[in-house]
Image (cartoon, rainbow, N blue to C red; front, side, top):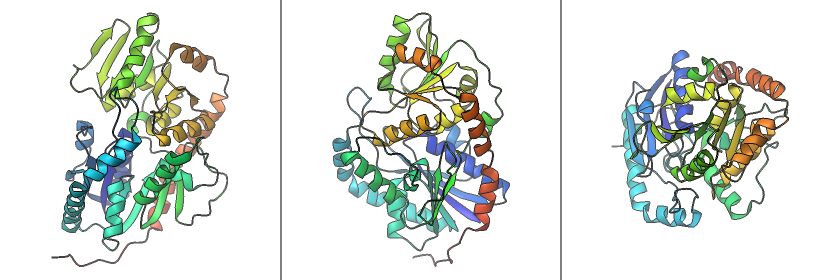
Amino acid sequence: MKFLFIVQGEGRGHMTQAMVVSELLRNQGHEVAAVVVGSSTRRKTPAYFLQAFSCPVYRVQSPNFVTDKEQKAIKMGSTILENLKKLPLYIRSIRQLDRWVQAHRPDCILNFYDILGGIYAMCYPQRATYLAIGHQYLMYHPDFTFAQPGGVQKLLFKLNTRITCWNSSQIIALSLWEPRRVGKKKNLVVWPPLIRNGVRQASPATRDFFLVYIVNSGYAKEVYTIAANHPSICIEAFWDAQKMPPGYQALPNLTFHHIDDRLFVEKLSQCKAYLSTAGFESIAEAMYLGKKALMVPVKGQYEQQCNACDAEKAGAGMAADRFAAEFLDKLLEEETDSSQSGKEFYQWQHGLETAFADFLKRLPVAEEVPVTP
């Protein structure tokens, strides 16, 4: 079968998931004909992602978040207004996306949680078989726990998630824990996290430093404060501040690196604990390597609050409202049955290939639709 990917470019995790699925498809004899990345001026698509595919990788303007002046919190009201202003641009993006779809004629379009991909499926329901994949779809499982309080942000999260999987014949939810019961949603499938080979092949060790990944560069001030006030705490950090030099030595005990997938895996496998905003994929990788995680949800992003709750439930570590030294001590001293949760996670994750092969066998393929002139 021939696949076309639509990938949300806001988070690195969705890109990592696309890379892993691409390799799984190739191993099963299938083709990824093209990849479309939803991008914005706020994020630069990393080189390692562009180099991971032998097919064309296209970039298209897609809705994105607006942050505060400190580059930390998500401003939901401003996000909605700014994206409404850009509606004409997004309409052009959908038309461009359709030209690529018609050029490559995929059997399946796999959407990695990009809202533009969901809107495209609304507008062109017969173009291909639509599939959706992401950890956010776990909200459809009865054992999922929503962060409290929910309010308007919960409603917006559920609405956004619903749009991204519109017209999907199968919805693939990624989970840190193995469900013990089947959900009521018939087209929902739950898979373990998509762990890349670089992480699987890493040899975990424990060196005397904490690893930090911050999706919004504004959190760098909190990390700097920890290092400045505690010279005995060594920190290796990854950030998205492209204007800063690579390997920036902010303090003798604090180094900031540009996003580099291989270097990140190397540091993750060697750190004594992992500190991050509450993204899904890197927390899963930390669990796979047996590293405890401190998770600080991005302010104003309800999805990350849910991620932190879910990761605590799975035994990944602990959530906090900020990066601070006192939480590091609590994290390392926390009494959890990490060996048992780690063993269960490892077994759950290693069932991915079997689940994937079985999924492909049962995948319905849409009838070929004539190309629109």
